Length: 435
Image: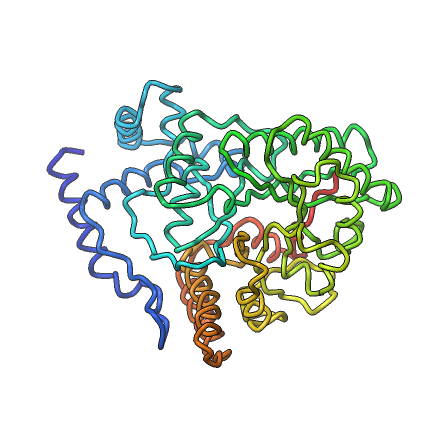
């Protein structure tokens, strides 16, 4: 394409963006601070997006499924890719590796963050590199965030590049994130309680690799699912296997704190009872590097302090539940739209014992980060109302979440793999693998 033709194309795209802006912006919150509107993109930004779209936009997991699609590049796309590689290359790595798109654009509009000791955020995408998770967190006004350090569906992944490590650390500093407010989530394949020694060792290697990545990035916490007995041994024996693996991993690493997540209790899954968590913690040698992440959807219960100890609480996953209490199903729902309800989250956000803990949303986003941005607003409004002594309008707050969810659903995003599986029959649990 000639330079003049390309300029015309960019100009047309920019004009189209301006004309449809009002139709695609997320709805503002009635009676509260409006949700941030997307700024009109410059021609340079549109041009950059056009270039990025010429590459296949797949995650690491999807690369295994769609190798053919990734190879089909037009001459124009190849030229754009080569140009971008040349601009970004700092002398490290190969051009092919540099060509992997940085899907989060640093010049995007960022949502103002609430100054608070309650550190609310979401599990954001790390597509294109772990460093991009920082940008995606800043874009929704998060004060904490979670991410996957590698593909959560693979046993092994390429090591982190020196460039990704450096960018991750510099962006944490630039956007004001304490490394203690970052909560990586472990692979769904890990099962440290498997009675089969060979399979358990495979899980341990994957687990240790995650912890080593945390320390490379300077991250202080690591959250994982304890696993399952797979029906092959008594619960007590398998809980011991988990603790033994944690002790081994502690000796092979320096500072990262292992955070065990409570489970909903499907099948042979461990960690659904507080006594399970207490038993594992009791067998860990270095008590300063072990803790618990409470998932509200999994939890739907109480008495944690009496059984485990509040001093071991290191993080929260904030999710409503699609299923009733004690269903033993892990089905996350948007806040206020499930069986848990908003009052529970009000109590969490106004409990002074829970300050300075990462609180991470794992609610459905429909591939629209504005959903999490709105839920973060609603959560912080509880803290504001509590300090002001005003009565919370539960219907109004629920309506704000419903409004943004409806808008996100109307954007026409294709459902992810998990959603497709659910459509075909049988909803998917993310508690742990069977291996």
